[in-house]
Length: 156
Image (cartoon, rainbow, N blue to C red; front, side, top):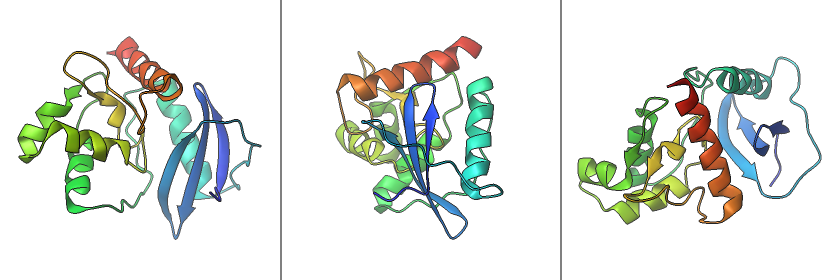
């Protein structure tokens, strides 16, 4: 993927894609990539500043403009996720019940969230565990979910 910026984060690296004044994708990078700093005055630079503010205080509210592209169901799930406050979680089933959906369908939508952290899918957990994260049950992404939740609950 052609990222408009690649940055270091406390839990790894993030790649971002911004176009036409909107954040379109924010991705956790599984393998280390060369850094691609954001241009001064760019939306990517603004996003880096907002991410830094979030790392300093997880109660920070993002205001970077983003554009979500997905099915009607995915958009509904992402809207519901965006309402979960920092330091709180909901279960996949909670969102599924509210949307007359299934927990599996909610989990699939969470995994396809194009702007994690901004739309905080890490705040959605399984009934008896953290559940997956970013379309994976692998340690590399579940570790990120654990980091994000620990960071938020530390301030809660």
